[in-house]
Structure formats: structure tokens, C-alpha cells
Image 1: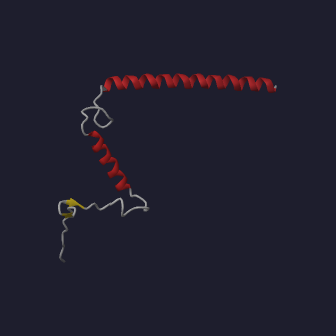
Image 2: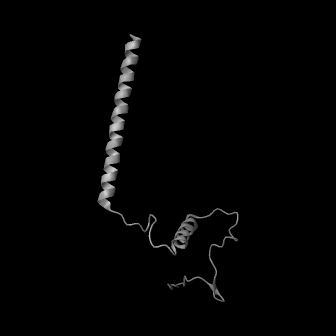
Image 3: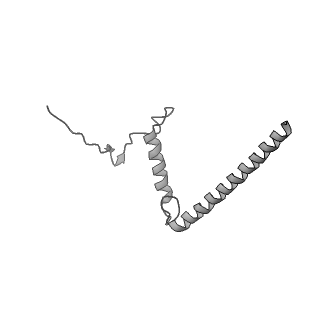
Length: 100
């Protein structure tokens, strides 16, 4: 049984690279997830040129500060949830008293 291998390099015509997903050819057709991901990556690369810092992918942050910030937010959310729970219990109790 013979096997063959194919070269997966993009075709070139006089120095220009022919794209597999040409925007003009696929006009009106649904875009695949691979093409969407490629568009996002290429847009991130294009916008990243000339900038040295910033953005979610290239940011460097202090992990400890971020952890303590999130912990404080979580504590606040828990306290708000407990307060809302007690208010609902009070409302329920007052409704039950008014029925009797």
C-alpha cells in the first residue's frame, strides 16, 4: 500500500499569496469558525503593531492584588445576598401574619 504526502504551503503567484478563504469568493456564504478565529487573530496582530504594552493578551499584572480585589468583591456580594435573603424572610413573615 503506497502512501503519498502533500505539501501544505500556500500557493504563490508572482510573489502574491493566494488565500484559501478569499473574501470575494465566499461572499454570501456562512463563515466557518476557523475563518472567524483567523480574522480575530489577524486583527489582534494588526492592531498590536506599534504598541508596546496594554491589552488583555500582553498585560502583566500583580496577581496578589488581583486576588485580594476579587476576594473583596466576593465578600461584598455575599453580604448583599445575605441582606436580600433576610429582607425576603421578613416580607414572607409579614405576609403570613396578614393572612391570619
